[in-house]
Structures are given as structure tokens and as C-alpha cells.
Length: 323
Ligand code: SER
Image (cartoon, rainbow, N blue to C red; front, top):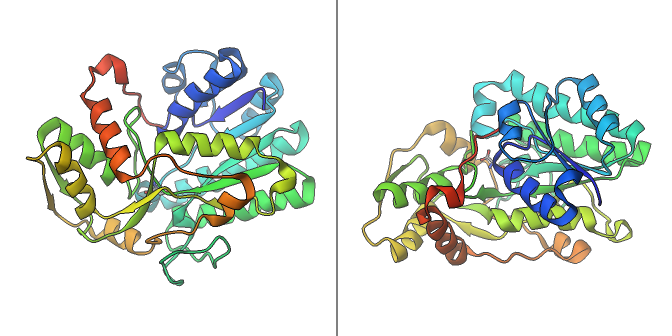
């Protein structure tokens, strides 16, 4: 990888991925694009507005910038996807097909961000293996499960170098997440630092897979750097770093902020989405095929999040979120 195009760069993942890629490959070799011009421009360096649902615009961006790798991150998450399922379909699946079609002629490798939401409630949800039946029940999950298959199709049929990760809930302090079910974890830590309290929309015992953003960024970069001859799987790899419930997260936060209080007002939509997702996925295939290993567990993530959020604003700038 020498030259990367990031689509959906102003979102929770893109904001930190662009910074990491620019550190590795140089500012001029990473083009940040987002539906909202300001979100991409706020990252500094080369940027452009880009709507992934516009196939011609996606092709033109690849022709102009000539990336060898494209990180396609633009998507509606689970809660927003249920509010606007038709839009989620157009952005998440239509946008992906536009990216793959452009890659077919222009040749870059494609990173696809999939999710634990690509699984559904019809399988045992503890230690879900890499190759499990995917019958998701949210529009977000449906578009991501189908997206994985389309990525594999473009690899098999047209030779496009597609690779993807099934991200768990991602926790970060730079750009706020938007519209996800796992966002509660970020909101809880932010609430704890800001005013010592948080009202959680999920039941106290709802266990989900999670990961701290530095691990997620490293996973995406390492996957795209991996020797393709070692990859039996491609779209998409289970990866996880920790599992916790709102109750165990609250307990960890109180080790740093003893007066923190979490109370609960369960949102039926979020709860039903969370109940349909794995309690834990098995990521041993990613460990075997390209050496995935996490650095942050619940304790390390919570300590780093709280320390980062306590730093003055200029040191941990807040960026707007993407679609
Ligand atoms: N973070 C996503 C969501 O909650 C899951 O991949 O929608």
C-alpha cells in the first residue's frame, strides 16, 4: 500500500484512519473524501466531497487520485438504518457496488467494513465462528452480509483484491459515533467524564463484542498489508478485543470515577437489535491467517478513554460524524 483513498473519511473510523494512513504513507498520498465537504476538509491534507451513491463520481475520484487501496467506510449504522431502511440500502449496498465497479477497471484493493451485525439471532450467539450462517434481521446487517458476498464475488469473478473486517462496537474519543447500537459505550464514558452519570438504553446484562479504535485502525491496515497468499478467507474476518455489558462497563468506569452512576431506560429498538447480535465472536481465523491480535482490553481502553477525554479540547479535537 502506497496511496489510499478513504470514502466516508469524516466518520468515527475514517477520522482516525486518515490520520494513521497519513502518518504511514505521507499526507499527499491519502485522499479523504466524505459526503460532507467540511467533514473531509476538517482532517487537513488532500480532501474532496464524494457521494458513494454516485457511481460516476466514485469512478472519477479513483481515476483522478489513482489509489492502490480504497478504504470504503461510508454507511448508515444499525439504529439510523432502521429509521431509514431504503436509504441504508442505497448507501450501504449501492455505494459498495459503485466502489467495486470502479475498482474492477481501476485496479485498487478494497477494504470493506463489515460488522458483528451481519449475524442474526438464528444461530447460537456465544463464540460465533468465522463461517457461520448469516441471517441478520436489521437492514444494516442485511446490507453488510450481502456486501461481504458481493466483495467475495468481485474477487472471484473479476480478481479485485477485496478484504474486510467484521468490526465489533468501536469505542473512540476523537469523532463521535452516530446511529449505532453499540454507541452507548462511548456515550457512557463521555457521560461519566462530563457529569458523572449516564442513562443506558440497553439492559444491564446485554453483552456485546467491542474494540478500542487504535486496535480497529491497526486491524484494517494490517489486513490490507497482509500477504494475500496467506488469506483463505477475505470477506469478512471476525475480529474482537473485549466483551462487556453495560453493568461491567459501569463497574470499570467507577474504578476511575467512583461517583459515576449508570441508570437504565431501555429503548426497545436498540435492545432488540442488540439481542439479535453475537454475545461474542470467535476471531481465531483472523489470528491464524494474518496475525490479528488486540492490544486494549476493557481496563486499558477505559483508562485511555477517560484520560483522553479529560485532556483539554484542543488536544482531542472533536470532528463531526459521517453518514
Ligand atoms: N457499531 C455498529 C452499530 O452499533 C455495529 O457494527 O450499529
